[in-house]
Image 1 (tube, rainbow, N blue to C red):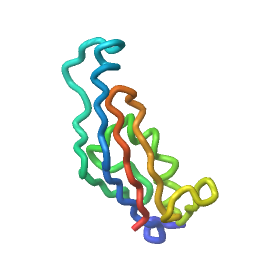
Image 2: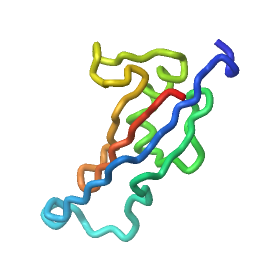
Image 3: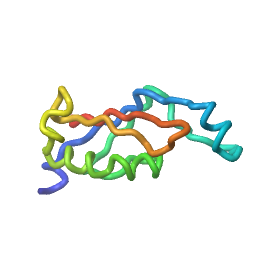
Image 4: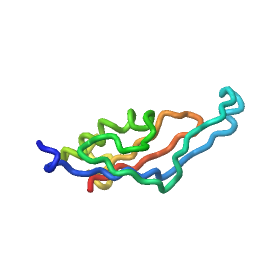
Length: 104
Protein backbone atom coordinates (compact mmCIF):
# COMPACT_ATOMS: atom_id res chain seq x y z
CA UNK A 1 0.00 0.00 0.00
CA UNK A 2 1.44 3.37 -0.99
CA UNK A 3 0.99 6.65 0.89
CA UNK A 4 -1.48 7.79 -1.79
CA UNK A 5 -3.66 4.73 -1.09
CA UNK A 6 -3.74 5.35 2.65
CA UNK A 7 -6.42 7.25 4.50
CA UNK A 8 -5.85 10.30 6.65
CA UNK A 9 -6.97 10.03 10.27
CA UNK A 10 -8.44 12.94 12.20
CA UNK A 11 -7.54 13.03 15.89
CA UNK A 12 -9.73 15.16 18.16
CA UNK A 13 -9.24 15.80 21.87
CA UNK A 14 -12.82 15.41 23.08
CA UNK A 15 -12.41 15.44 26.86
CA UNK A 16 -9.71 16.35 29.36
CA UNK A 17 -10.15 15.37 32.98
CA UNK A 18 -8.31 16.91 35.92
CA UNK A 19 -8.23 14.80 39.08
CA UNK A 20 -6.99 17.31 41.65
CA UNK A 21 -7.66 14.94 44.56
CA UNK A 22 -5.34 12.31 43.05
CA UNK A 23 -2.74 14.95 42.22
CA UNK A 24 -2.78 16.22 45.82
CA UNK A 25 -2.49 12.71 47.22
CA UNK A 26 0.06 11.12 44.88
CA UNK A 27 1.76 13.53 42.48
CA UNK A 28 4.87 15.57 43.11
CA UNK A 29 4.33 19.19 42.13
CA UNK A 30 5.25 19.76 38.49
CA UNK A 31 5.42 23.08 36.69
CA UNK A 32 4.46 22.06 33.17
CA UNK A 33 1.55 19.75 32.44
CA UNK A 34 -0.34 18.75 29.31
CA UNK A 35 -0.93 21.49 26.71
CA UNK A 36 -3.78 19.67 24.94
CA UNK A 37 -7.13 21.51 24.89
CA UNK A 38 -10.56 20.01 24.33
CA UNK A 39 -11.57 20.43 20.70
CA UNK A 40 -7.98 20.52 19.45
CA UNK A 41 -7.46 18.47 16.28
CA UNK A 42 -4.60 16.93 14.34
CA UNK A 43 -4.45 15.04 11.04
CA UNK A 44 -2.28 11.95 10.65
CA UNK A 45 -1.11 11.47 7.06
CA UNK A 46 -0.08 7.96 6.15
CA UNK A 47 -0.35 6.75 9.74
CA UNK A 48 2.40 9.11 10.86
CA UNK A 49 2.54 11.12 14.07
CA UNK A 50 1.15 14.61 13.50
CA UNK A 51 3.36 17.58 14.27
CA UNK A 52 2.95 18.85 17.85
CA UNK A 53 1.17 15.68 19.02
CA UNK A 54 2.02 14.66 22.58
CA UNK A 55 4.49 11.77 22.39
CA UNK A 56 2.88 9.91 25.29
CA UNK A 57 -0.61 10.18 23.81
CA UNK A 58 0.73 9.14 20.39
CA UNK A 59 2.24 5.97 21.84
CA UNK A 60 -1.21 4.94 23.10
CA UNK A 61 -3.04 5.64 19.83
CA UNK A 62 -0.39 4.84 17.21
CA UNK A 63 -1.49 1.28 16.43
CA UNK A 64 -5.12 2.39 15.99
CA UNK A 65 -4.15 5.33 13.76
CA UNK A 66 -1.94 3.07 11.65
CA UNK A 67 -4.75 0.52 11.28
CA UNK A 68 -7.33 3.16 10.36
CA UNK A 69 -4.96 4.70 7.82
CA UNK A 70 -4.68 1.28 6.12
CA UNK A 71 -8.49 0.98 5.87
CA UNK A 72 -8.86 -1.36 8.81
CA UNK A 73 -11.54 -0.87 11.45
CA UNK A 74 -14.28 -2.56 13.43
CA UNK A 75 -12.00 -2.91 16.44
CA UNK A 76 -13.15 -5.37 19.09
CA UNK A 77 -16.09 -6.59 16.97
CA UNK A 78 -18.30 -3.52 16.99
CA UNK A 79 -16.92 -1.47 19.89
CA UNK A 80 -17.58 1.87 18.13
CA UNK A 81 -20.78 3.00 16.39
CA UNK A 82 -18.57 4.18 13.51
CA UNK A 83 -16.45 1.12 12.67
CA UNK A 84 -13.72 3.38 11.25
CA UNK A 85 -13.09 5.19 14.52
CA UNK A 86 -11.70 4.60 17.99
CA UNK A 87 -11.74 6.39 21.36
CA UNK A 88 -8.28 6.31 22.96
CA UNK A 89 -6.97 7.98 26.10
CA UNK A 90 -3.48 9.10 27.00
CA UNK A 91 -1.82 7.43 29.97
CA UNK A 92 -1.76 10.40 32.37
CA UNK A 93 -3.81 9.14 35.31
CA UNK A 94 -4.00 12.64 36.81
CA UNK A 95 -5.07 14.55 33.68
CA UNK A 96 -6.26 11.98 31.11
CA UNK A 97 -7.29 13.18 27.67
CA UNK A 98 -9.73 11.19 25.54
CA UNK A 99 -9.07 11.31 21.80
CA UNK A 100 -11.52 10.41 19.02
CA UNK A 101 -9.75 8.88 16.01
CA UNK A 102 -11.68 8.96 12.74
CA UNK A 103 -10.70 7.75 9.28
CA UNK A 104 -11.31 10.55 6.76
